[in-house]
Length: 218
Ligand SMILES: C[C@@H](N)C(=O)N[C@H](C)C(=O)O
Ligand SMILES: [Zn+2]
Image (cartoon, rainbow, N blue to C red; front, side, top):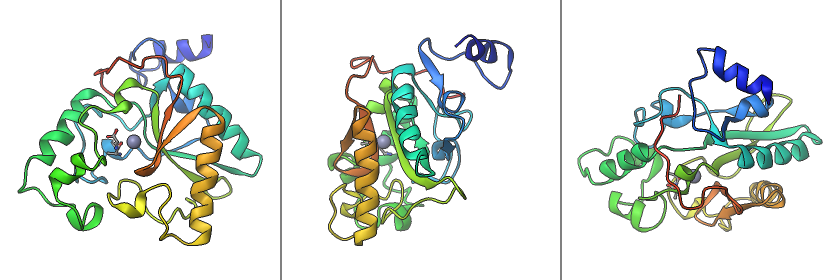
C-alpha cells in the first residue's frame, strides 16, 4: 500500500486520483489493458471526453475483487483484459451528445448496424447515467496468458445488438462456454453481470452506490 502511494506521489505518469481509487494494473500487474475510450478505436471513432490516458481506475474494493478473479483464472494460465473501468460523467455526457447527433454515423456499420442512435440508449446499450461513473463497474474479456490473445466470445466489445446479450443463443458452443466462464469467475468474486452486454460487470457491494464521479482518467 505504501509502495502504491509513493508511486502515485512521485511518478509523473501517475496523476493524483480520487481517494480510494487505484490504478488496476498496479494491483494486478498481469492484467491486460485496452482502454478503448482513450483512443479512436471505439463506437464513436475518436477519443472520449475525460480520458486523458489509457489507464484503468477502480475503487480499491472493486480492484481487489478483480484481482481475486484474475488469480482464479491464472491457475489455468488465463486472465482478464479490461476495455473500460471507471468512466467520468463528462464521458457519459459525450456519449449522450453523440447519440443525439443523427449526422455522425461514422462507426455505425461496425458497432450498431441494425439500430438507430436513439435505440442505443432506449434499449440499454449505453446508459445516460452509467454505473461506470461509480467506480466499481468494469468491461472485461478473457485472454490466454501464454500469448495475450483474447478468447473467442462470439462477438466484440461494444457491439450493440442481441448477439452481445449474455445468454444469446447464436454464438457457438465454445463461445457460449467462454461467456459462462467469464460470468462464473466474476460472479464468484461478487460482481453482477449485465444481461445486455457479456463484458459488463458491477460489484454488488460497491462502496459508492450513489456517487457519480467526474474526475478525469489520467
Ligand atoms: C457503452 C458500453 N460500453 C456500456 O458500458 N454500456 C453500459 C450500459 C453503460 O453505459 O453503463
Ligand atoms: Zn460497461
